[in-house]
Length: 477
Image (tube, rainbow, N blue to C red; front, top):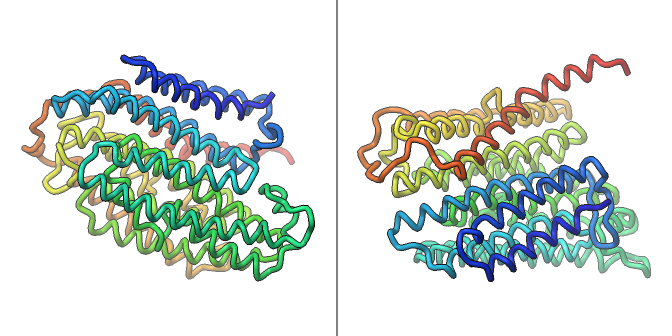
């Protein structure tokens, strides 16, 4: 039994239903569709999900990102139910029916295209799916229709399409310059044909693809769209951009890295990826020092985490495991923080951090879990990100790069101190007088449940993985 075709068909059919139906059911249908997909993915883990005909496939890498996508997609759809309603109440001008319809229809199309990126076998269909994620999400970034969102959406679209063209050129080089009459156009086919592709072609293609898909992944210096789009998009969409879309950009890079490794150019791919990773971690960490907007702060942190992922996947088996855990933990924590940004924006009336304090007293659940989330994304124990970042440092030392490990530790320590400072300033102290809106001490279930699930997930990864690893090592070989 294969579940991938159903996982792609269900959101698409639901998007059609959302477009034509009216009333409250329109807001809850995406929750049902993404919930079914989450169940199908879990079911697929038991019955086998390796193959699904000539168009779809799933291996370990795509399974990890698919799992992230279905989980974050479900919580984003659930959070959106209350978010859209609260936005309507705040403006005292309920969102027009067509605007609500557009939001949830585009959310499902965005979600479906994110799934397609990692489920499709063809390199060009994967590229097309990544481009579709940009086209669907750019309209969501501009959902509120203000001058600021217009500017962010246009900047996002132009940079995304430029990156897409670079990636397409790289893929055309890999596919078009194969020496055989039968040209491989799937990721697995290119992997088998890698040794026959000229080394110079492989390297040039990787540089183009790294720049193109690096734009999608928010790697420096291709990240200019990221803080603007993340800060202006509705909070559930920011969670999907950070928690899913960045991983999909990294997916294209990692697939190409595998091709170069099979073709004898692994060291070139690894060193280039690691260099870009360190550049991303360094610049993004420094940028978090001077942020005055909490959504832009979280956006730069997303770039930093993807930089760590890039470094990790250049370090062999231990690094690959660390990078995989880093992707999972980052998606769990950052999505939760963007959900919290929605709660803060509703209560504070702005995304500016100036004067913001006492959130843990004004909004007990939101404030306390926000502080925990900011510590978690900074890499504090016992959260899962501490384990994955520790493994990246360990992999660097094991590879003989102790100085690079020390440099990474400096950046991580700086980021930790920075987020600790922000979390204390925002979470504690006197309640800001600007909390002028009507504040519910406990958020609605559609806001509380997603954040609780994400926090529990990263805590489980941080606390249970070391225990499981210890038990496995004690078992007889």
